[in-house]
Image (cartoon, rainbow, N blue to C red; front, side, top):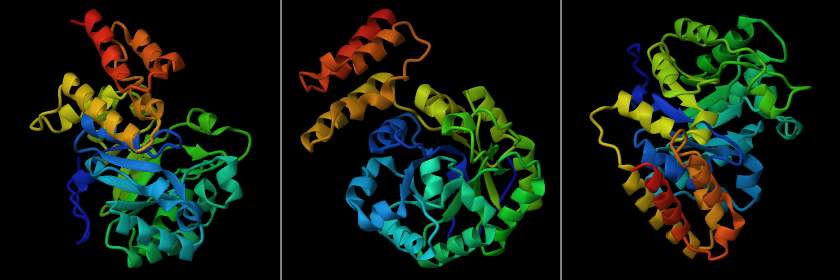
Length: 335
């Protein structure tokens, strides 16, 4: 890990050492609460939230979070400078620790809104928006982007994109180390088919030595993440944190060995209490617990655990004790 000093007002670079990517329909407040129990020092991101949803919709539904989730960053989707500034201000007032602009999502729905990955074709617009947001809030303003668009093989493209934002003061970049193919590939295929170029992310660190670059894309397990932590300023996990969430605790334990983590029994107890509290305010129990599906991955009884927590019949009682039942079944097979 290189030694890096960010400008005044930024947190210590370690703030970005380990993070969980913003994932639509995944990283909701319940998922983040669970991930926080696993990794106390990880930086957690919201799903991408459009500026329109915040400015013209039910802002509280999109923005409310439990204080226990902190530090948590708000990722915005949008391309209108005024709207981004207003949404960033609201996000800061809501208590978010960082505002992040999405320049990486390739979905057709996002493209129709003229934001996400297609913004990489307009680096000066992105730089102007980031600059305006930085002037409007006190928390860090960051950007998550790809390496290029479609099948371009030009490092100069991403260097110019980063350079435009860098010149106007942006100092934290989250690099999904693949291109985004805007036509012909689904969002899932865009996470798998375009080749990974970790070397380009490393080159950005060399070209902009006083900026911080977090590596995202294709990080599947703890050993890989820890090795990449030695080469990059930070790592951001996506689907691995969803499908095998225990990986967060495994990485955290190695990065911060002095920090005592909760036992699995304590995590179950915390989530049981949390589920009861959320049900009391009208939250759906199944949605509260869905982020725990992959937690016992690799253990005996993991399949039964998933069955118990996904079977609609088990939710008819509308009792959080379904979690205790699943845990008891798992413990019998893993004494």
